Amino acid sequence: MNILIIGHHGMLGSDMLREARSTGHDVTGADVPDIDITSRESIQTCIAAVKPQVIINCAAHTAVDACETDRDRAFAVNAQGAGLLAGCAHESNCVLVHFSTDYVFDGAKQGPYVESDPTNPVSVYGKSKLEGERLVRAGCKRSFIFRIAWLYGARGNNFVKTIRTLAREYALTGKPLRVVNDQFGTPTYTVDVCGQTLRMIGTGYFGLYHCTNEGECSWYDFAVEIVCAAKIPVQMVPCSTTEFPRPAPRPANSVLENSALKKLGLNIMPHWKEAFEEFLREEGKK
Image (cartoon, rainbow, N blue to C red; front, side, top):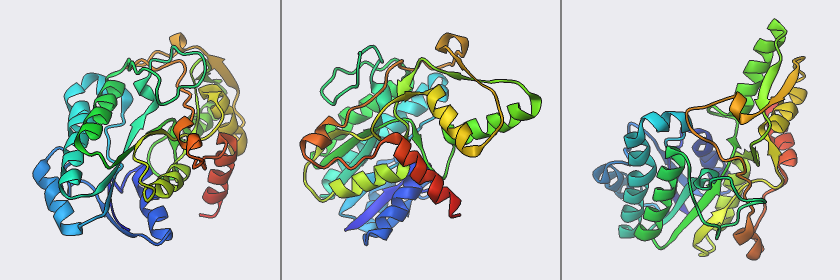
């Protein structure tokens, strides 16, 4: 397929570009300043030049705390921008892939969330992404929306890199590293999201899907795995959300169940520990 990946310089987009090319697709990447997804004219110009069959939107305003103080930018990119892309994709007869988030839920449910569960985002980021979902569905019937969560990869800023940096700093000072232990979700490897996405784009099974690695843990559990793998001699201490306040509220439970993918027999997402081991193997090759 001829695929246009928007936001290909980012953590997910860069891996999507590489994985799509490795599976034989004809792939073009577009990112700022060459495309502005808040501008219909900019999107139309890019689509006219590439003439894609599939558009994969990896562009987003993902700084969760920054969204709280820059609501206009969050909604411009995550909602209106997604809606403009959907409209342009529909006009050009393209399939659209869009990524959303676990933060569309409030975290009050006991147990994993499935696609049909009621949404109730508690942060500006979550609200802007939920509105983006609505606009994508309304603007492009031939669309896939994948909700992803706790994403990490080789590029960009993410929890793995942050914990490694902090652990090394704290190891030097002898201070314990405190990590939240009452928020639960699923660490998800970018490459697995790419593989699942590329498996789905030719199926015609358009709709909303949860797309995370299997299993669940707390941020503290994941941090322990990261520090142990890196062999950093730092003391780890669990703490509560109230002890580590952030500008944007986070759901206590954002575990997603890939229910829709499993019903189709198309879920290929491995357990998060297996995925993290694969990430470390790939990292070791570089």
